[in-house]
Length: 505
Image: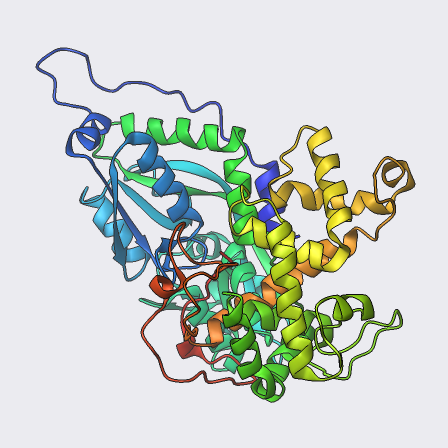
């Protein structure tokens, strides 16, 4: 489990923050900041592009902080307007001049913030960590970096931690204005720089794409990440945000967002990442057109179908398991016969069969379950069987949790391997850990494929619809199309110029 999730569960909003009204209620008083926002009907936010904060998805902006801010604006009944800054330096400058209502910078509170901003914790903790290229000596403390250069982002969480440490005086610090965490990690990956400091949540989101980057040591303890409000504002808007975030934590919506963006980040280690990228370059090109053709037939993102194939067989058409499942999509004899596949070892028939079978499985998942959870349930059903999935959903519901939410059900699937639980179910024993890992792995492979391929999906027929994970509700596949782009550049290593990493949607 990523450290984001672990910290989220142990983080609580400080109850000592007292909600007060700064201005008197006299008729001649200037409107409060909260009232001004409501009167004008716009909430202005300044942020930067980062997978942990904000980025432009295929059809709409997304990101953990952005999704929270969007819901906050909806609760206030106002429009959310986002201005994207180059880096944290610009965000802090805009806030200091009171040119935005909220800053989403992915920062923890710093010593000099008290006189400049109001900081509101958002229920997430991060730690400053030093990373290094695995071809260089591993540092275990700042003392090991004496005489070395440590590379940092501008106005990051790390600079004052280093400055306050006596051993930090011996370190040369190089600040990179305008660079983001992915860009910094890419330079460590290539060996251009040896050592850098990044936030743990941004490392978690990016680490799989940079297998040459290793974590050395942490700078200090985990700290709350915050939204920043200009000190020139009164407290009313910040107080409204505190109340909103407390409700989001209490009703589980914050945890669901965390699972959506961070719940699958521990599924691809160094060896797995290197192997996957090698197979993307050397195996995927043989089958990519087949994945595209048969995914188009069922209105499925071909990269998801390819991710399923990789999880099943590592794209090996002759794969055979000890239990008798065969082929690139590892179909059982019964399944192949049922869906009309004669030769499971033929890659085209196997991919066609896998696509048909996934369409059938997906159709059995209740339509009331929204995406992407409906797809996660379909993947779990593809792996463990619909009956066992339903058993887990019933256990989830009996425990007072939400059976239509993947983040809840995945906690109960492993119970199907325990006698005290599976004896109470209709379909009995199942290796319930496997579908959880299965779904998480596919989500990670899908993430990487989404990043390194162009979104050049073929147009499906109008009456076909299974799932596009990044399509807006009610939107057709044709509407979700992006303009045609050049073919994908499938390389064994991810180059720095690839830019943003989109978390799973």
